[in-house]
Length: 292
Length: 256
Image 1 (cartoon, rainbow over the protein chains, first blue to last red):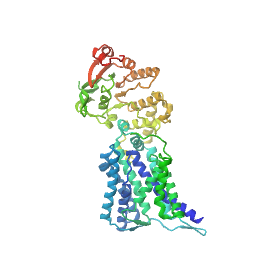
Image 2: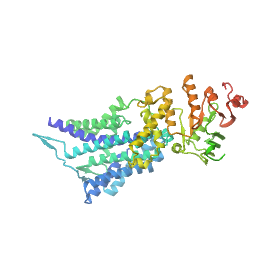
Image 3: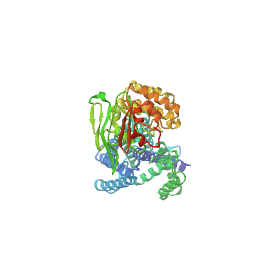
């Protein structure tokens, strides 16, 4: 009983982070039809920026805020400078670009931050709670993780549903040509979309890192899980990404707890295969042909 | 012909796609408060001409004249600010946004909310916000589709979707309205209603339309430009054009 509860709680917490990462991938996919494989090293770089600041003796929260801001700027920069020239071109160009950026950021991080494991602090306790005679694996940092992701999702919903800017961003994502005709500065919207997605990715990076070890490759598995979660929910559906992230987090946690932790990555790929075979449009997106 | 009163003009515009000359030294004027029809057989260059007018295609030669200025071309996102609106053949409605939101995207621009002010949260007051919605609703109301404001375009019949698209173009109160095949897919009655509506709009704006339905073209347009193989082969009133031998030759086999 205790093990099941703890496994589920662990899965839920991890699932929230996958959900955030999947959401970042979906935001970029919706606006520019690009799967941003470089999302992982981008989040890794911003987490290292936070680590530098914290190691220099500043507070965790300053590092946290700096990482999110760096994520915002890095996303905008990547879209404006690197992605813009391949937008609207053959899809393979963007795939190669983001994979290339993946490798470049990895290499740069190894040079700048060093290629060894370093511990990253957590803002809150990472001990479980005692409820009666059970130790529940819900930590202070776990609760913070869940609340932080929920808060960011709530803010994104507010932005997209209830503001003019969100309306224009949605219009740009649905049909760039029409949005332009209606006077929307589509380029600005795409830059902002990448910036926000990168911010969400950075948040996921910080949450994964909290109370754990970081090195230039620590986010690489997460981009795979985030991608599986996004496909599970339907690449076009932000709500699907969130549910997909949670489902995946809980499933992988169950695999890890009851089957064997060495099978987690394999299980994620198996889930991806099953989804692609049985419901390639994802659980939540309506089936429809891709516009070309 | 300078001055803002002269309307919209295309002067000596040539567009080449690779080795193909899609438009060759095309000139035309869409005077204020008039309806100008652009007709011609398939492949004559009508759509390219429209794409030049709305900035999707930049001409290789020639200029556009609008609001008293000669311009080498326009940029699509500047159109709304310049008082030009365009509808698309495929309507281009945002299917996942409500009818009202679709129109709000168009209304948003006239309200002048800049990117940075929007980003920094310097939002318009709630009263302005309400005025914007009011304006979008009244544009829908003018077309008789305000009751569908909360619906999604995909759930509406085609004729209603066309009205929503027109409302979205009109909400910005353009001085020049570019209509790409406004009658396609409409019944005879709906087409007659559209014709009346367009005549009614001319007290506020110039209209330039590309259309295949000759009944509508003949009854609505003040003047016509006939394109064939990227060249203007005739201009004049609908009656002039109808009797023009070059036009008859271009349309051989098609009823004019």
